Image (cartoon, rainbow, N blue to C red; front, side, top):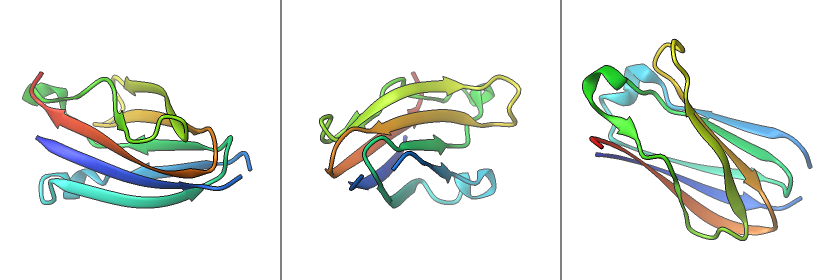
Length: 106
């Protein structure tokens, strides 16, 4: 099981923060943590490595510590996208929250 943690510090613009998990490091490090400062209305896109042929998959919903600060807009495994899933979150209001995503066998 792999847990990915993202700590978000929300202030106030309209941009997108992109967080990519390198595939070559995916097997070496089982835990990733990023701290990201974004503003209300901004998006955070997390692109973790994935390999559905292994029987492992990303859990459909991320755990968001404070859902009044951040919401999960969508999650998709992109077929044919060279081992990438795409998670999109939207900052709702000022505050701090933690997001956890789980990778494991269904």
